[in-house]
Length: 116
Length: 112
Image 1: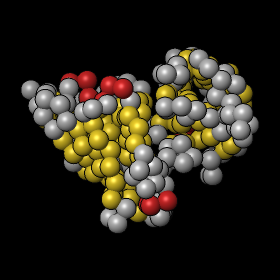
Image 2: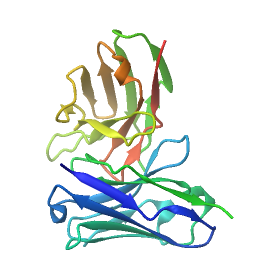
Image 3: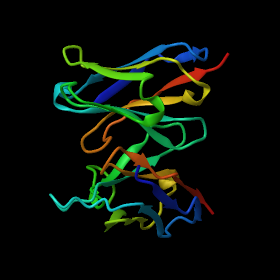
């Protein structure tokens, strides 16, 4: 059974950093691209970043480019999202998702609240 | 960026009815290489993660009931739910992944 379990969220002050993790199991992690998708409270879904199966290629939405870094450790079957210079508009539930077919499995999500 | 215009914003239905949700993209999602439309549909129930229903515009994900039907090509796409059940009440989103992924704004399906 495919499982994606996010961790690392919480309350953080504007301008500070936070790192999310996603532990994957039930499939060969190193064969799949992975992504982060977020959802602000009561709002719709928004793609954040994608990483290729081997980590050689990464893609970001414009609003997080230069602030967020997606990475992976295939030996640990874990996906990461390093978030720097956080802003109030980054407040959302962040979901880890498998990328092919697009976003076919999702984690339960982790809440990130950016507030002073 | 490709803009996805989804309609309606909300829909009130009775059990057993048929509903259609529409998504229009600002440019074609049809790949000339493989003739596939890079359009997917998701269902999100309250307090839950999204669930993939349909990909490549019309391919049903494994385990999805056949009352969920995706159709369309190019820039215009439709999700049809026939014989709506109470368990189908949720938010529905379209997604294009022809280029950097963008979602539609969502459609809330409610009971009349």
